[in-house]
Each structure stands twice: as structure tokens, then as C-alpha cells.
Length: 436
Ligand code: PMP
Image 1 (cartoon, rainbow, N blue to C red):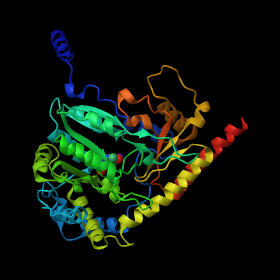
Image 2: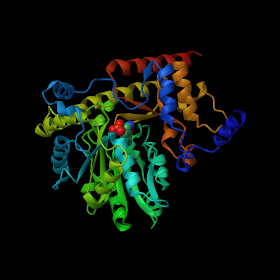
Image 3: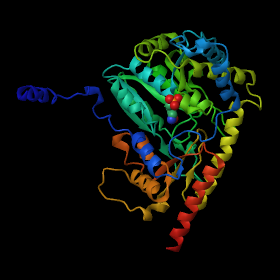
Image 4: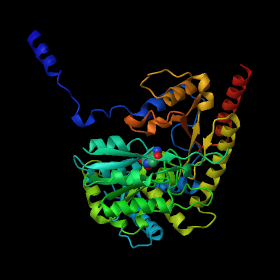
């Protein structure tokens, strides 16, 4: 037995993880979600609403559960429940002004997350470069790397606001020459996220035109993450890059019922695009996840049918939700500005980035630390003040993490009482600072 246990031990010294996992084992959400769960009294960290989804959606789910169709408890079509892909095709025909085939131009996924995963696995080869605009939703980088690709980063650069005004997410812009310099024959794709998490930037028609021109010129694909497509404020318009000349054939549009209907836990997402791209996403999907929850797809399909009927009308949820969120945004902007935590006014999404510089004296810097200042600040804040937010550096590549360390991101898709509680914490904090 001694010999046996020895040889078993020896066998276990071999590395177990696949090489493609090297360097991508850390994930900021795991860490910050845990910190928020342990310490936060008010959680404006992770992006999800603390208010309920609309009644018509939960009622649709109840109907699906209690109705006579027990087949809704079984597998449905692998690439998307037929009623859902049909209504998504109808909806996107309207938005894009082109005919769509529900069976080949739409695929349902487990949230936008899986749609992204399918894109990178299906379209990116070893050695391919993928351009990512910083700051970015953090999963793009590890997903590119897992596919064997190389992420190439290009930053949005902040332009100082005009005399004393608050900064807007529109003040963060790409340098056209810098962007162009990132495209080469190795570039396979660019990831676009408009409206952008974390800044809330809504890329203008002109900015998208520039990206589109470069994609066409260099025969580059566009993975267009549009999960916040309905969350656009101040009368701004969300432009779909797939509708620009030459772009439909090279773009995958990604969306999320979680964000669209305030039901992130349902994890229903989709990819919309030309069959020449989607056929390869289907290959990844059929060899990994294969089916998504039927009953959630049925309810989301009914939600979209309602929205299709009410399209553009004041009763439409896609009209009402941004109205409500714009008020919440304005409220949080005011309360942050009031305590001197200068907010960058977002044009879209339910996130807001704020400048923590005036609070720096409370959380002294540790020179030469590997951890960016904003990350230490956010950890200190949740532990000592009970308020959870996410450091902006989490949305930058390793090499650029230390370029922007004075900002944290708040999510304002929250009940009034939650936002009020956050504001109270900040007020009290400011008073303590003033009196000390
Ligand atoms: N893309 C972006 C930009 C996001 O912010 C999120 C969610 N935070 C996702 C994709 C993932 O969406 P889902 O929950 O539908 O998987």
C-alpha cells in the first residue's frame, strides 16, 4: 500500500489546468461580488436592477408555467425557441430596415455573455488580433485569449470639460489616427460596446462611421455588444453599426433580455447577424450549451410581442425604462456632485463613473503597490462605509490599469430608497471629513 499511495501522489504533481487558462484565472466580479455580499449596506456595484421586471413579463412567465402547454418544460429548438427567434427577427427587421430569417439570422444564447463567448470561439483563431476599446466590459479580454487570439487595446481619451462644467461620457473619444494604427492584416475583429459599460458613452454616428470604414478597409469583423441599446438619455439616438454601409455582412449584434426587460437572472440573450457568421456561432453553441431554458424564452418572446405592438408608443417599456432611469441618473449625478465626487454624466447605460480624487485623503495611496488606487479605494469604501462600487481600473488591460485610478463606477438601476441610502452615506462621510 505504501508503494501504491506514493505512485498516486507522484501522478498528481502534473498540472491539471489547460494552458489556455493561464493568466485569466482572476476575475474582478468574483472578488467584488463577495466583498459586497459581506460588507455592503448599499450595493451600487454589479449591474442589475433591484426593482422588479415589468408585470407583463412576469405575467407571461406565470402563464407559460401554468398554461396547458407542458412541452414548455422540455427542450426547444437548439438555436432558439421558435416564437422568440421569430419575434426577434421581426423586431430587428424594423430596427435595421432589412429582411431577416429567424432561423439563420438570429440565435438565442444564455445571456449576452454566451453570445460573446460563441463569437470569440467561432471567429477568432490563434494569432488573430482583436481590437478592444478601453475601458471595456472585462470579459472581452479573457474570452479573446481563451480563443487563442491577442487583444489589442485602444483607449477612449478624456478631453477636459469646458470651464467648470461636469464631464460627459461624450468627452471620452477615440483618437482617429491611434485607432487606425491598430488595424493591420492580423486584425480579425473589433469589439464595439455602445452604449458603453462602464462610461455610459453612446458612440456618435460619426465615430461609428470611422470604425465602420476601417472594418471595411481591412476586412475586419465587428462584434457589437448592444445590451444597453434601449438605455439612452437626453433624446440621444443609439446608432446600430450594422446599419452602416458595408457593415451588415461583417457584424454580429449582441443583446440581452436581462438588460432589456430588467431580468438579469433569466439569462436570455441573442446574437443577430448574417448567416455567414451565425452559422459558425451555431457550431460553437451546439457543441457547448446546445439548449437554453425554454420557459424563459417563451416569456421573453411574449415580452417582445408586446413591445413590437407598442413600438415607439409611450406605454412601451423600451420608452418608459430609459425615462425612469434618466431620473435616477440625474438624482445620483446631483448627490455625487453635492459631495464633490465629480460624476461623468453618462449618455446611456445604467452606470455612472465618478472622480474620487477629493476623497483621497481618507484612503492614502500605497506607493509601488501592484493594486491600482481605485481598487483599494473601492475595497476600503465597502468595508468602512458600507457602499459598494466597482473601480474603473477593472475595465482596463493589465498594461493600462494604472492610467486611470481616480474613478469608480456606480450602477443606478436601483430603487429610490437604495439611491437615497447611498446618498446618505456620502453626505455623512463628507460631513465627517469637514469636521475632522
Ligand atoms: N455585455 C455588457 C456590456 C454587459 O454589461 C453585460 C452584463 N453586465 C453583458 C454583456 C452580459 O449580459 P448577460 O447578463 O445577458 O449575459
